[in-house]
Image (tube, rainbow, N blue to C red):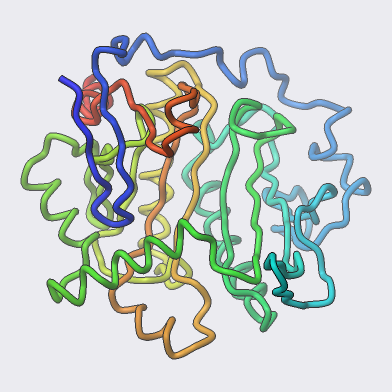
Length: 329
C-alpha cells in the first residue's frame, strides 16, 4: 500500500510506493570498481602523479602517503572578492574553498578500505575543517563523497571533497530550523528522540554500536537511504573524540561494506551534516538543539516527471524492507 511519509525534521514529504518495487536484492547495479586496476599511470590522483596537482596537505609527510589533499582543479568556488548584491535578483560572490581528499589505492573504494584508513580520513576532515573556518567569510563546510559516475564522480580513484560556502545551504538550514522548532516545543533533541524510537521499534534499525546507531530513514527519499547517528548529543562533527572517530570508521566501513556486497557495489554518495560555523549569537543559540549525522545515499533509482514537478521523491522500497535486507546474513 502506498503511503506519504513526512521527514519529521525538514517536513519534506516522500511517497513510499511498494507496488513500483522490485525485491531489494534486484536493485543490484553495475559494479563501480569492477575491473579497475590497483594503479593507473594515467590517473591524476595515483602515486607518481603528485606534481599534477597543487598539494595542500599529506599524511604521513615522509614515505608513502596514505591521504593527501589537493585543490580541486575544476573548483566550484574561488577565493574572490566578497560581495552581496540585491536588485531585482539577489546574488553574492562564489567565495569559498573546494578541496579534494585522496586516499592512496586506485581500486580501493571506502567500503574495502581498512578501518584505520577511514579513521585517518576522518581525522584529516576535522583538521581541515578547523583550518578552513578561520576564513571569516565561510559560513558552512560540507564534506562529501561521490562513488561512481552515476553519483557524480568524474574520476574513479577514491576521493572525498570539502567545499566551504559563504552561505548556509538551504537543506542544512531547514534541518537546523526543524531541530530548533522541535526543541522549543518538546525541550528535547529530535534526533535523540529518533534514536530512542528506532531502538525501541527496531523495524528500521540496521546496526548499533556503543557510540552510533544506523537506521533506514523513516521517510527515505530513495531505496537504502541510510542514516548514521551518534548516540551522544552534539551539534558538531568536528568535536568528535578519538574513541568516537575510531568507532565511526568501523560503522562506516560496515555500512558501506553491506551495500557493496549486497547491492554489488552501487554508485552512492555520503555526506556529513554538522552545525554551521558559529558567527552569530543566532547560530550559537540553535547549537543546543542540533545533532550532527552522516547520510549514505545509494543512487539506484532516478527522478522522473512526478518528482521534478512536485519535489516529492518516490521511493519504491519501504525502509523497513531495506533494513531487514541489510540486517540479514
